[in-house]
Length: 491
Image (spheres, rainbow, N blue to C red):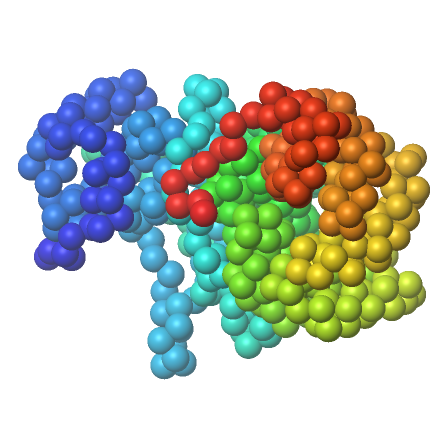
């Protein structure tokens, strides 16, 4: 029976510029290269996929995802194409809400998305993207859980296993099967996260992003196999941590839609581990991304979700979330709300914790607290320059504490913040000093985000362009600055 047109497929198909016959030939050719010589796609089948919503049998959806990914230069999954056979089932309570994905479904999405991302890395196909979703970036099935309206979800609950079969109905087994996955193996993966996190903090996301995505892909593969419950829960947390890193690194190099998808995957993986604080922090990353892109209202919506459903959080985690929400309020020019949130963050940060701080919170130390406060007050100073002095106090504290941490990217962002504060305070001489220090160091990172911050600082120099030294600095920045990355859908 016809399901009606597949709008997702039709929209992406229109972007490719292909004819239906061209797509059919590409599917057959790619399928043969993947060992699927039996495919015989033709123009009429392509028409049924688009106009009647027909979902082809495996492996055609995966083949289609691969050819669309290569053509569009961004990750395209079977879900993006509207070709998912397995949909969430409905609850029996009459609410009409969908049940969250089963664990195997989450692992499947994770491995498919990372696999496509790795394919783009190998072929060097990057650039085009889809429009960023607004505040509702986190799937509806996470809202109830994050807000505590859903029952506790155990990571060890088994999901349905899907048997892949060949054209003649015989089962097809994976060529690669992992060995035993126990505590030692999971511990090794947990240590790898720390290594990647240190790399990111030091030099930015560009150098290690591919390695993180590859590791995440391997973890997703492990999660589709039978592992004892306790190890599997830890493995889901590894997946959440890696997905946050992959998202942050993608954001750091300007791959915004890709970053957003990783943050959603991270929140879902944390859900499988029944770790609400980890999911809340992943949502806060999506909020920080929105703020970087100038979408404060969306960021505020995400932060309300992150804070409302965090479960039992450490005070330090609450402090971190407060600083992100304060940034959103500052971007909207709301001074009173900003001061209140930052004051509460300071009180929470020094409150004793009654349990060990998780590894993903380790980077939120006193230097990072001051760094976030400086960024928030610098943002507020755009609306009222009187707040620049408080921003200067915090950025100098951040720089002092960050001196021995090895976080070059954060130190560079501090320099840019301090230069911006001096421009806003009407102190061009001090601004020149720190702007030049930042410009001299920026080439040592692979972070597009630092260039975006420098670009924002450059705009503040306009009122002093008649000063010869400032005019010279502006020329140096214009010469060094790469062209801004703009992906379709980004404002």
